[in-house]
Length: 300
Image: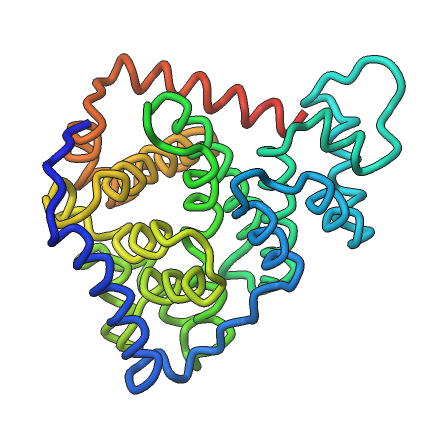
């Protein structure tokens, strides 16, 4: 990865994005967007993890406080992904010990987000399933990218397109916009969103993670995840570029796994993403093997 020298502009670009979001929410096109409140358990989880030494007992109590979430952890811990031996887990604590803290937190975050922002529209069929799949791909890629936190990468994959269901619930006519944007080949998806609604899912997704007080780099990365022209610019933190570039790779690998054709973003911008990550096709093939192994293990 190319690492430009840090500069004052790096911090100011992220701050500018946050300021623009706040101003647009007060007086601009975002003021009518209904952002679901952050789930209380997710806020508690973030607080527990923010301590220098995370309170593992508190994390376990948060997990156990929701019966369905606890059942999800137990199902995963006793499932084929972790190839359990011996007696099955019967408590949340046992499940978390078997799964590990990082994976447990990822499962809990996905569970709480999915229930806070339910998606029932046909235009977003399998939204949370695909978001979870993208998060798994991102976390897997992060292990191949020194310096990129798998936790941050997972969050980026999970929340990348969260602006879409929020727009669908908030903006009249957005369902039709999704159909139009997907069909048009003369301009990017977000250009159609902006033409019809004066905002787009990248902006709204960034606002969601900001309102939910999720890690600050997610706000910037999600805001810029379609702005591939900015890839490599010195006024943006290298970590943000890496998230955006890896996100394009993850989406490409997901589509290949699902038998879907390449999308316009990949066709137009994969050379820049691969150049930033300093990988070639052989390395990408190796990454694909690792990601597909995780996909297949999760669906076993």
